[in-house]
Length: 139
Image (tube, rainbow, N blue to C red):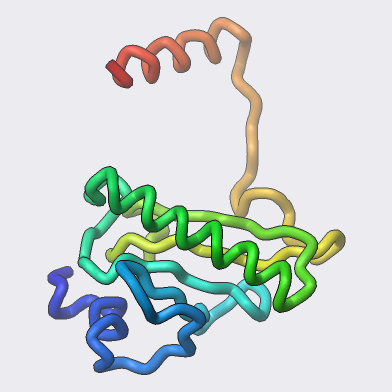
């Protein structure tokens, strides 16, 4: 998807409506139209980048700094006991414009950890082998 066809770029440009919680600086924050819970906010950079891996390093710090501020505001404004913060890259990313989900949480709200089934490693050796592969790829 090109930046011209991107829904979030349309919101950034003021061509599409949104309920903003922040509209200043290099990031925007607005309510998700299909929230997990009321107050579910999306934080997006103004400049179109498809995924976290496409963002310049300074923009990553700015994006997550804004997400941090949004999470604090959710706790103050809605009496949330905490927040869930998440970001998809390509898989399950419904809009290909980097964005962070900030979701208000309360004990007993029904959200169970991650949204997918969890599993164990077959053995400690299998875990060590995966860790070694990722460590080597880190450089």
